[in-house]
Image (tube, rainbow, N blue to C red; front, side, top):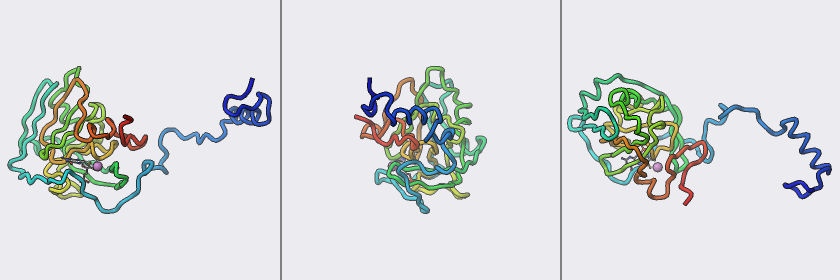
Length: 222
Ligand SMILES: Nc1nc2c(c(=O)[nH]1)N[C@H]1C(S)=C(S)[C@@H](COP(=O)(O)O)O[C@H]1N2
Ligand SMILES: [Mo]
């Protein structure tokens, strides 16, 4: 019998060392989950400015003309105008953002309506497991309902105390801080609740279906 890793006999010096290391839990950091010192996900670098990325069209949507439709596998479909959106309970969060093109930006202050507030209103059906976001420029992206429903996910209309600018998706975009930024649709116009997953613009062009920065879910495997 030989050691499956090294080919060494089972009572070699190396094997004995490995057995001892296993007993001592050597090399394990003992950290539970993500340590504070690793705020930056793997393969990312920090930026101070906020880059603009989109398909090259930046729709000019007047607040007075903006509407949000929420449809599909929900008990109550909604069609909100700007005033109705502003009349919902408001939330603010500070979070980091991570773009798959490797930049990350810390401590962004967002104002908006929490996705959980929206979920209270529309009441997703028991068989709703995914959402598809539809944007004014034709962009779409898909999310598991569980990710959309994250405690700090927001329908954002304000950044750093000012209205969200057109280039960054104003008047309203989604922000889901725990996923790569391509999941956070700018110029949000409709949210569709689905029973089955339906990949969006980048997800049908080689990006990962979920997009977790901490496990580098950048691209799909196939
Ligand atoms: N409507 C729309 N939303 C979008 C995109 C887009 O092209 N259209 N691009 C996504 C991508 S790939 C990124 S990295 C972020 C960029 O957001 P920012 O320009 O505010 O940094 O928006 C995401 N949301
Ligand atoms: Mo992106």
